[in-house]
Image 1 (cartoon, rainbow, N blue to C red):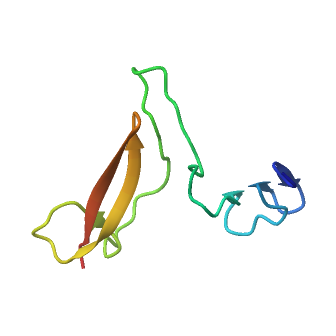
Image 2: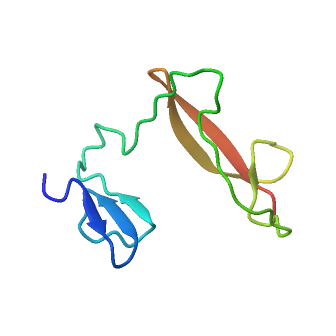
Length: 96
């Protein structure tokens, strides 16, 4: 595969599957259009630690929040996740 791993030091960006990472500091481009493979697989063998940790700032504007609380509003969409080999669909609802 061309550009399996690409570093653009001038723009502080890394690309997997792309030689022009533009969407983020790290961009993964799945070139398999059949959808037969996931774009990213994570495996946490240490069950005492968080699986995914996000650090950021707090926002006062919550208009873009999503929730699984069905009393909030109309169904907005689903997030597909694979949990130990089983597909799960998490519904989410817009809060605004």
